[in-house]
Image (cartoon, rainbow, N blue to C red; front, side, top):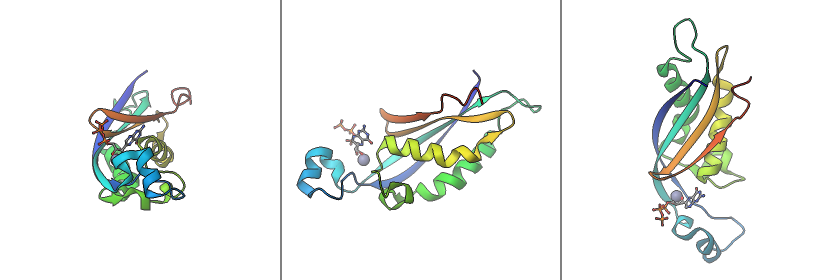
Length: 138
Ligand SMILES: Nc1nc2c(c(=O)[nH]1)N=C([C@H](O)[C@H](O)COP(=O)(O)OP(=O)(O)OP(=O)(O)O)CN2
Ligand SMILES: [Zn+2]
C-alpha cells in the first residue's frame, strides 16, 4: 500500500481529571496530569491511495492547508479541555487521535486517496493512533 505522511506540531494545555471526582481522587488516577499542564504535541497525518496524473496522492502543501484549517487553527495554543470534542471525554492522546481523525476524514478524501491514520505524539516516546482499516479498500 502506498502512503504519504506529513508531520505537524502544536502547543497545547490540558488537564486529565474527571468532573465527578475530587482533586485527590483525580490525582490518584492521573498523577501530575490531573493538574493543568502543557505539551509540545506532534501530529502525523497519513493518507493512502494511488498517484494521480501529477504523480502524487495529494500535494503535501494542500495537506498542510487542510490540517491547518481544520485542526491546528483550533488546537494550537489552546486549552484542549475547552474544545467541543473534549466536553464528554478527556483530551488523552487516545481521544485526540480519534477526534482529529474524524475532524479530518471528510476533508481528506479524493478520487485517488483516503485518510488512513492519525498519530498524536504527546511526548517524544508516547503516542496514540487511530487508523481506518477500510481506507485502502474504499
Ligand atoms: N495512555 C495514556 N497515558 C497517559 C496519557 C495519555 O494521553 N494516554 N497522558 C498522560 C499525561 O498527559 C502526561 O502529561 C504525560 O506526560 P508525562 O507523564 O510527563 O510523560 P512522561 O513520559 O514524562 O512520564 P513518566 O513518568 O516518565 O512515565 C499520562 N499518561
Ligand atoms: Zn499531559
